[in-house]
Amino acid sequence: MESTLDGDGHCRTATYRCRTAAAPLPAPDDRRSVIMGNSHHFHLDQGGHSITVNVGPGRDGEIELLVNGKVVAYQKDHQPGMNILTGELPDDPAHPFRILLRQPRLIPSPPRCTLLLDGVEHPMPERLVI
Image (cartoon, helix red, strand yellow):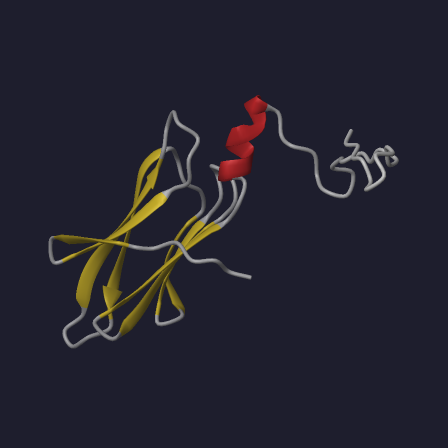
């Protein structure tokens, strides 16, 4: 509850601040579902090609790998720890690469995605999809 005094020293009506319009805050045990409950989207432009990784909601959501907007790899669900997808850039000859998706095992935090191309790791930034 909040109350203030007006210019004459009289107390104004108290106002209440509450979260009735917004969703209630999750309980501490539900923090994992808040962090892992969302979909994640990673994107990187590499060598004139667009590489995108979409990770479905939750720890068991699907993973899809797109190159230039076309799905080239799909995994029905993902597990905690390391998930690896492979693809090829459509060059002549085709250029193979791997996607490393690190899903934390113990600490509730978002996944991290890395492109492994020619033995070099390129972190893939997460992007907001509206």
